[in-house]
Image (cartoon, rainbow, N blue to C red):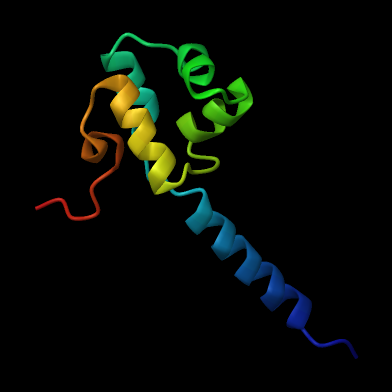
Amino acid sequence: MPCCRPNVLSLRISSIQLIIMAELNRLKVVLVEKKKTARWLADKMGKDPATISKWCTNTSQPSIETLAKVAKLLEADIRDLLIPTNKE
């Protein structure tokens, strides 16, 4: 009789995916506030527009170094690009 371990593994993978897909950045919002497009950012960063799209939808996250470059291009504080973890 097979053990339920595959289900446990599946649950763990799903939990990890939820953490990875959590909203961590506000890039899409800041682009709108600054009246810039994802394509503009892709051109300035030398990145594929699909990469910027993934950042904007929080499907993947840029590195801190990359986020600093984005902030500079947008003339924004890097903290404005992040969703606060402490709402106080």
